[in-house]
Image 1 (cartoon, rainbow, N blue to C red):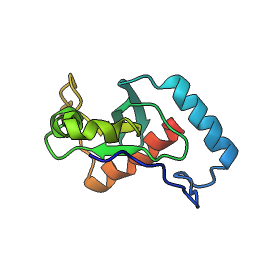
Image 2 (image 1 turned 135 degrees about the vertical axis):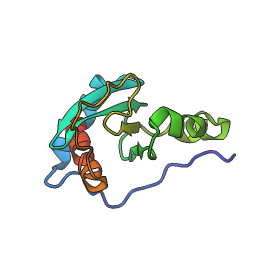
Image 3 (image 1 turned 30 degrees about the vertical axis):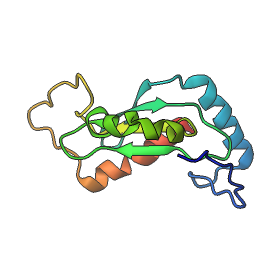
Image 4 (image 1 turned 120 degrees about the horizontal axis):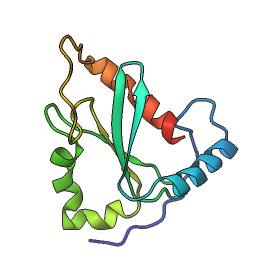
Length: 136
């Protein structure tokens, strides 16, 4: 596999509306301090709590890889084989990875209480900005 080459990015667009370059730099610094390899976080959203795990160290001007698993799986069962594949190691070392688990799909998740209304697909998607906001 050929070596990865640095790519010059000519236009930067923040992931979150209204984020200034100074805020982005502060967020990047905070992320480097806060996020250890494989650290799991949980954040409350309007549709319930969502759990996500962060791997890697944020690098300047590099996007993150964000994954959201398929139905009935979690990030480990869905993506672990892909990210453990030998040829992927050179790629993933250059990116921070954020693996989002849908409510109740994380390892060791408690059983939902009687009458619990599981979020719709649109509501599950609406949880992602809450994760991004938490990560700044």
